[in-house]
Image (cartoon, rainbow, N blue to C red):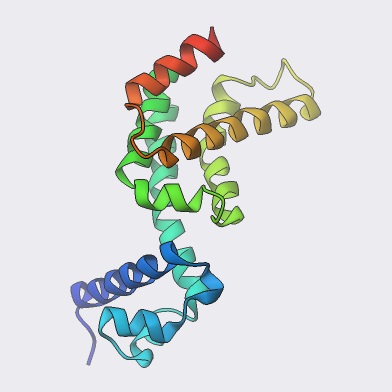
Length: 182
């Protein structure tokens, strides 16, 4: 008998939620499948129908977030003729704000370095197209500048989200434009 897709997705969502509640409290090495299934109300066999281990579950959460970011960049932000930093960064920040609980942890000190790398890879096409034209820099220069910009974006987003009461998206963009880009 095949499971209904909505039941399957609800089970996955419940497992992701239970895992996340535990992951926020402690490192992934200290999160067990038993704790996840107890919290979600399933048995261990159910967990293994969907995930190989807790690392695969974390990768599922990360991929859902980053796939959304990549779609946003590729289907919306890269369509313009020029970079509008306020608009482009605003859209990225609004997404980070919407999923604050996830981005704050994953980009923070305890976060997964792979997530940070993949976040940078999702945003990089914007900078490669609009900020670092290939004919103006050597490959080495472009690589260094790209990493500089991407690390700055990650640090700004991470710091902004870690504030107990972060400034508004508009205020953050205004600060960056006023103090860094002008």
